[in-house]
Length: 167
Image (cartoon, rainbow, N blue to C red; front, side):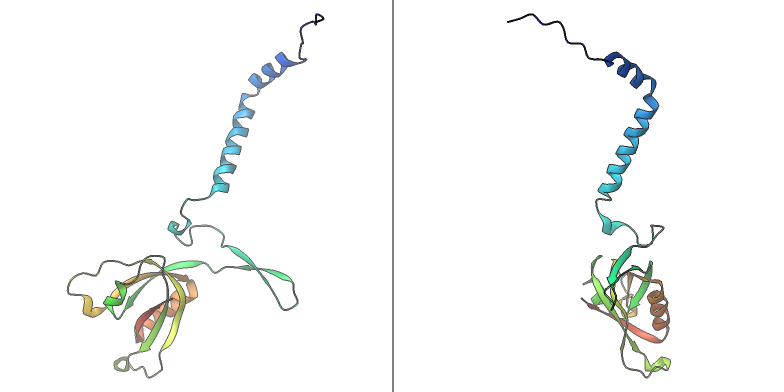
């Protein structure tokens, strides 16, 4: 076998020196890469995040009648406490359930209309424990709904008895 001279890589020492001089850039690049990976991974449990925490609402696309895609902003969600008439129904609910809220106007409060759906597909965020002796007054349920629906719920609770139906 013939004798070969040692192999020398050009600029090897220069690269090490340059890397040592630019430690700040290397550290910043590493931190940026770590932040990008964490942002892409997202929260482990997205359902536990409170609605309305993000600055921007989620956008979705839908196709209009002309076949064009339009961007549509999802409504900003708020939490709305709702007192339903039947406390036993509240024991059936769990956080994450979807419910419809139905208002049946109370004749004692001057209402004569038929029952109507006030909120559709509202997400249950919390079901507080019912204290002993307060079951005849109904039960409190906390729902995540758009702001306009929360206003309708508050108005309906003043003149009607509210009930929920599970979806």
